[in-house]
Image 1 (tube, rainbow, N blue to C red):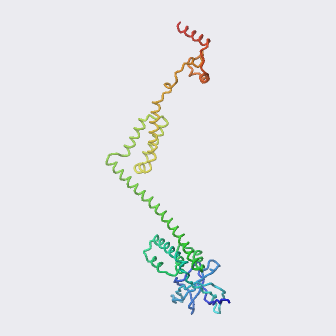
Image 2: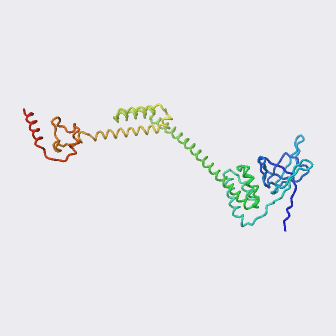
Length: 350
């Protein structure tokens, strides 16, 4: 037994880059004649959507001049079939009307609850006053609830057409939930970025007011930028830095002085830090020079202990042979060395 599908011939109205859903009113500048219903089909370029909406003519409006407009209310989905032009030149199409069936509550209950929660969170981020949330809660049919995703301005035409072409109610509700979750994620990212920007701006404002307060306090205490510069000049002079380090410190100090009041306080912190590093480095070097005396730390070792002597020099530290002699093991003085020492002693006695 074959099921007979009754087709309805309706006037075809194409909507360029626009999708109308069931339950949505729309006004078009269009003359429908005496027709009570029309078939609205989205079109992108030269391609029509696979599913359209059967709409009822609710009102005819006479525009100034000879224009005519109609107010339409979407009823339910329909699948277009064969189309042909009638004797009046109007394109009509055979439509398989597909009203939404009511699925089992066990299949849609959890999806409906999750969808409403996501939509309410989106509306809260949007600054809803509660009316839209109440409207969403008032929708009881799962198919109509899923179609509310098509009202969102954040969905593009392709996503709306995909939602319109999903005839199964459960699949449509799953698709609507996924689209709304993507919207929620995007809104959360935008909110986080906006909060970070606002927080950074507020921090800059707080820092600015704190700097101004510190400047006012310093002026009351008689501490000006000049006193700070003088203090660093005294530190540099007392540090007894090497010449190259002192020139660099004076160059940085001059840069700090040229920066002025607010800039010196705001962006001169790194320069002050460099001055402190220079002070610490100079102080450490000065302490190191005081603690280390190379001549005092030179080992007091007799040259002949290592079995080396020379007629030319009695100072082993001035001769390159010291490294060779230091590497030799200890041995007693030779007779030749004792002869040289006795000769030297005799000459000094004379």
